[in-house]
Length: 311
Image (tube, rainbow, N blue to C red):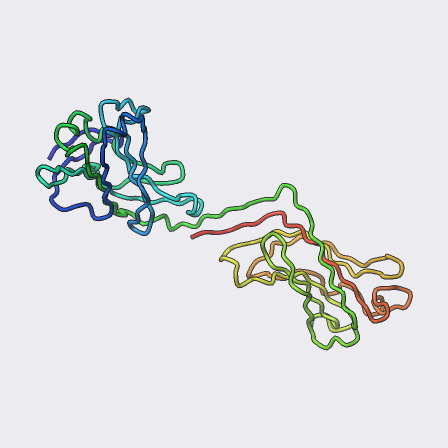
């Protein structure tokens, strides 16, 4: 066993009779990679420790590391864009090369057993000087064919701390939903709901309490905006909505309306006015809020931000 230097510091080179546990990459006509000026070859994805990885080979050495006399080999995190913000994975790994004459593998790994920290800004670790190109040609190519491999083990659990992502919307355009109630006098429920409408990927509805919420004690109409897909919200998600609810005056266009802004969440899915309008005003014949039994309610909703918590 020999200890050398790598881009990661000291590395350990040893021999194994067992093949790599997680991935084998067979390359036929290896020299053609050099002749075709293939600077970097990425393998297909493979899974280890619950994550997806790739083997990355530089047949002519990693030029950015001045490793032109060597073959460079790295382990790379695959599909990292699908991982939540703030992800971190600590992994120990070994990269293999088959000695086809002796049917054994040389393995290269970091001397440290602490593992390497893969994260959004560093998705790749490995060995700039994995093996000399001359040594590879003389000892490890069989008919210009070679075999690489990899084993990956999580040395430390992914960070369990929570990550919060807040997205604010620069140009928030309001969406208007109109709810027309054709025979208001026939409403019997304590709470009536409009049809569901979609804004910013979430479902919403208007809640109407013809006799007010229980805390009001009667004599008022209560109106609220509510999330209709609370069960689909991830824990900690909050949506900042600016909204206007109005009852349209169908005669004089003197609409009664309220404006509010609220962070909607699973713990606070509805927001509005317990005393939106008194029965006296609503049923007044001088107004067109209820005209020939018809009531028209509008909600204008603009989403200004969404906060999501991961972990």
